[in-house]
Length: 376
Ligand SMILES: [Mg+2]
View (cartoon, rainbow, N blue to C red):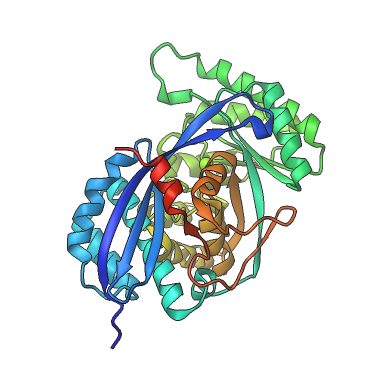
């Protein structure tokens, strides 16, 4: 009936410099992301994105995907998702295919919203019209003093909830690393400094990004016990479901996980094993809005909330849209990278983001900025 057929799919690898001096941290890094543009034969253009340590790795997947979904109904997102999954993955693996599917699926939801003149969060269910943000003070290599400075600036901006990284470099650097025991002791000192600076009322979480083993994760929980840490995100290597379930039985600190997962069945396994308190499906990694809506439905059936990030303005649509949604992560580096390429991003009011009625995602990449940060 309709003519909204997929006419082209294009991926652009970007590297965007991010300066943290606005947070009082003398560090600059770059954010790597792959921006995907999908066009329909009716002239609607949608955009999605995904992250990767080198976004160029995603481009061959996007090219394969284009061949598979050209001519499909752009509004039939479940059908497109199915074709993408079996074209790019078709096995028990996720990884690159999941990243590529995430970006394309997000672009298709942007198109669906524009075609139907509705924002994505309403298409997903419109559970709430504003979402609260939490700020991640995640600047690798920052000193305790710099972290405190950054936290105080974010507090001044209106944030009341904070998260910081622990366990770096942890298990990901096997040569010449410090013992994990020393790493978590330094973490505990940083947590104490942050709690002292932020006061007792602020929510403060920690995130090991899957870099600890069970023994050291439990030891870190014990070390930070006096500082009122509110939750522990992705404490254990591989998000090992059975170990997380064990950890959850052995400590009172709530566990969050799932930000880097690509398969819905992994989230199911976390739920049926009572491994987590909060699930974190990430639209830029898990397979876009289509897959995250499935995971959010699973979470609802287990009366378990979802939250997370890291592309704040994109993921706000998920958190606002679905019943299980709660808070959205304002990851300072990723947020600045998005501000560098997108126009008309809605601004926070304190730590709340009011959702708008702009169709689709409600914001657009600026072509000249995209060109400036494109890598070859
Ligand atoms: Mg995380």
